[in-house]
Length: 287
Ligand SMILES: [Zn+2]
Image 1: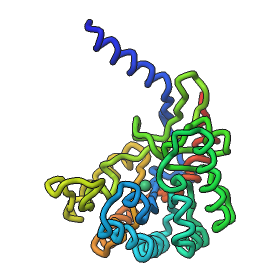
Image 2: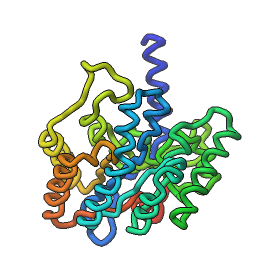
Image 3: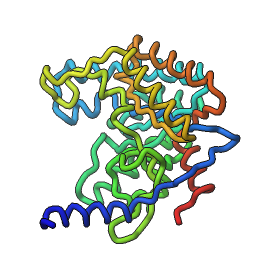
Image 4: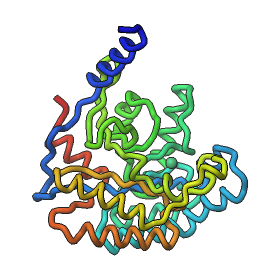
């Protein structure tokens, strides 16, 4: 065996040791599937961080002015309890929307202070605390979840119960650190169920040839198939939306059709990440 192959195998074994999948989750009240609807309320912050031109920033602003409100209305119509991952700075830019999300019963969770995690540990801690305090000021509740690159040990120290970021499995799982510390619960998403992968022009400063403007019907069919596969095995589906992407009218209409269709089957549960996390931690704690 070549050295390279041995190194890959050792890395795969370490990863397998660090990840503890919850093999079988019995959802509350006989639910067959947890459809975890999440929205990353980035507005223009990520675009700004990448130094994108004003037109792209304006597209992000649409998410804060229009998109988030359309999503909240849609979630309300369908009785969906969503998780809105919100950078702390969004509280200064769109406070009414953050308050409205919390007032409607959605979970408002951390998405970093300004969509980045500083390298210096003390600055990182300050960012996480500043974001948590900003969210708490508007919602009355300190966040217990995040979608971020924040250090797992820091998240645990600051009282966070879960991250919804890593993608090594399609079901909720526990991730231990390399030294065995932890774990922290991860509620995985996948880029195949992420609106930005299908509906974005100039995403991450990409060239024109790399654009992703997909017919909403095609995305609806793909996401329906993903849902049905998990429904049949009794599983979990994390749907990752962005108000500046899915807030456009045609995509709202697509999501409306998709949720309507899902709700026609019995046992479809639309919980927030917090509800999923608290259920997993209580019913299937780490071994
Ligand atoms: Zn984001």
